[in-house]
Length: 148
Image (cartoon, rainbow, N blue to C red):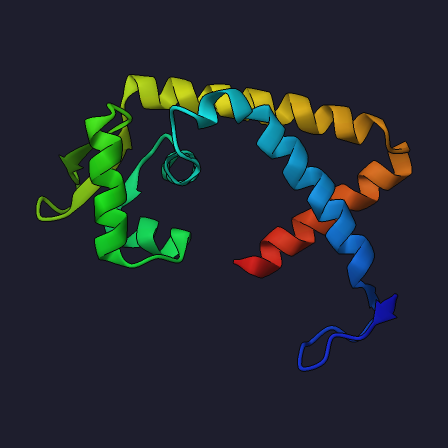
């Protein structure tokens, strides 16, 4: 069912139900990709690890990216540090700032998650026509750029 998004800047009709179905397929593929690790590393820790990335970030930026409070994010990163997934180091630019950095095992886990997700998404995308894949890539890129 096509509907205009009220109160938004969108001036075209959007098939929200189709978008939801497509998103559900993509999310399910990503979730299946990491099912085997989810019993040992909680989803919240995996998400934080993927956000922190290779270069690291401070606690407040991570809290903002997770849409969480600094205190809840601090507890999350405490658990991640105890699990050996990240370390806290002083920032080079500001010795007062603490930067969260993935450990080697945290980097390996993040790399493994990326590989698994990409493989699962490749299977989903292979079922689409080249034109549909291109349109999806353009739409998702625009969505990601607009969400920033």
